[in-house]
Image 1: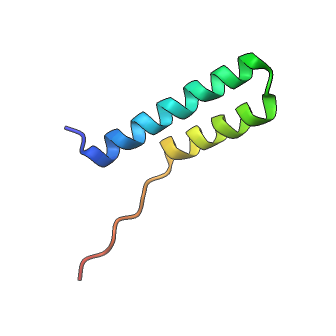
Image 2: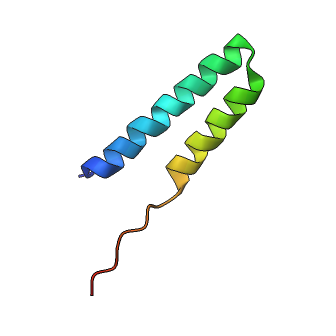
Length: 53
């Protein structure tokens, strides 16, 4: 099962993607490109975990 941090990241990616679609439909292409790029980064980057000694 997914942990809460992964679920939070999935929800954030979905919200950014939906906001990008809505801003694309309204004609704000620069902002929608920014939102799509942010959604892509949040879905593909792995957050580093601290190393335990």
